[in-house]
Length: 180
Image (cartoon, rainbow, N blue to C red; front, side, top):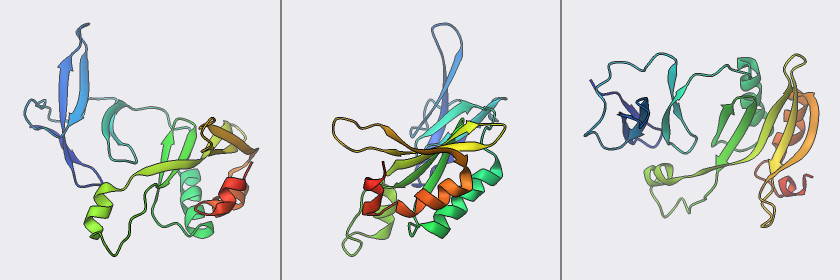
């Protein structure tokens, strides 16, 4: 049986495997069903990961640095302090990225299902776990100046809740670009 997964855009991907030159097995997802590996279950120690923009990977499971209640706190903070409804939160190791829709469309001209299928997400803000014992975080924003295009430190280490309250309110507003 071939493992298939549908991403948030509604595209179906099939799990493929191949032998590397060293004789190891390498996994990847493709929209093409032919040549897909006949695998009954996900290999032990692996998980399916979907990027915020819909690309799928089979990756090794890693230790979670960010606790579920911290993830929930950021999610609730987005709903409480920001008027942005379409966002995603992605955790990689000790960093929590907030993704917002990058492109905006004239909703009167394009059907909703096409907008949803073609939207792209970018990450303007991230929280970095700085101290695992004390659960202290730093916050950074992405700088869009042509010569820089990198992360700018804003604040911390501090408790996550105060950083959320202070910085999430600026997402989607001009005041975000004044944060330094």
